[in-house]
Length: 87
Image (cartoon, rainbow, N blue to C red; front, side, top):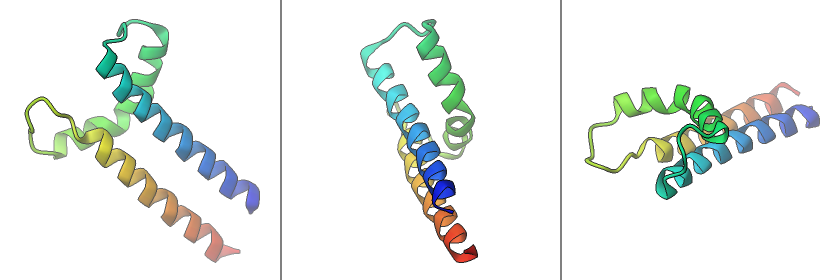
């Protein structure tokens, strides 16, 4: 059980980190064709795109990474409690 919780925490941490890296890359105008940039985009876009479609337009500010980070924390907490209740 401990290893399962650690795995969940590690996966959610890595995904949150990928979202934060994507935000930082958008601020510093990193080359969008660089392999790191392409990888980060491919990993995060399946979560950010549906959130972006649901949020109303806010001009130049994209709030989908913030919403995704909050949702990730909620899902992580729910999964942890579910696993703890099973054991």
